[in-house]
Length: 421
Image (cartoon, rainbow, N blue to C red; front, side, top):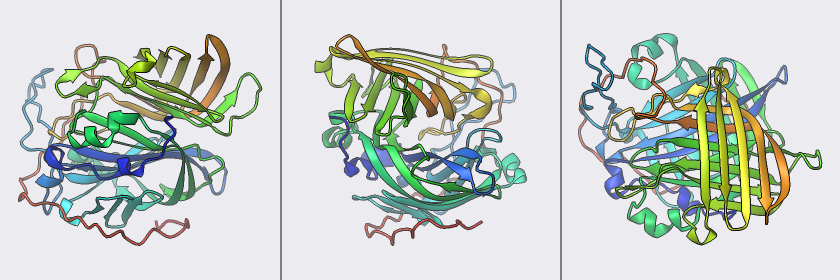
């Protein structure tokens, strides 16, 4: 069964060749409510580690330059590979923004065993708690294009309990992790996660409660990102059959074009639906289930739309999801080799739609979903044309020094309270 917790998969994974060309990130998303007005707002926090063996005293940025002619496709190679810890934090909805803070590897502490721990400055993350702050002003965002950041401020102090897991099985097992078999690995230790604490967003205080945070936590790692890139998940679900909320349910869909070594497996998704204690899994790596997948993601004038159909020899799932572009972000990353290939990667947390589940040819339920975490991006000949933007400037080369890593776990973050401004 996919609902099997395994915190060893949440460990720091950047060893061997991944230490010189690899990334490792922990993603968290949830909803809070304004302490004064009660208005809800969806947030995300991510700790993104890149190329630790190439790090030094300063963060190193990659990204190719565009020639002055800016002819499409005429992109020079990056001068170097990036190396840093990037703390990404932000919010969806009106005034959506992504804020980036970078740390040199010399200033990062990582516990490499279980449970994992990352600490840099006032930013801290472990299996059950996180705190930190990111602040970027308008002038900094304008000048430092290499930061790939909007302007704003966010600080947070949260504890979390990961209730339902999506363990993809042997595809991210110890042996395949050790030999770096896949270009991009995935594990959702908390596809349903209860968060508690507070967030300070641009001067407004938001309370986060386990009962209505609709929380999610997962991680990805590897040497590059997939294209197409698809992700859909929600635990704010209601049964159309009974009209009642589903308190013990969550779904998670992710993938696109996984690569095993040099071989690409085109248009493959991994999916799981935990329906009131009953599991529906659609996992192409479990070949004995005869999993088949069809999906279509498209960009309209005002929305991003996903249609996913998956089936095994016994089960079937059909998902139709929509999210407004005005509530989403074009989320920014650079790959470990220094390129920014994804320049139109739509990311949101306020999607809505339906998911229908079938077993043995009979409809189990059609589920109404809200607060859907969602992502879609694709580059290449079939991808939508990217908007014109200025690439970041590579920094000067740092000395090649390994990061400081401590195996001793730091003192856990204290219980949730008001975060510092």
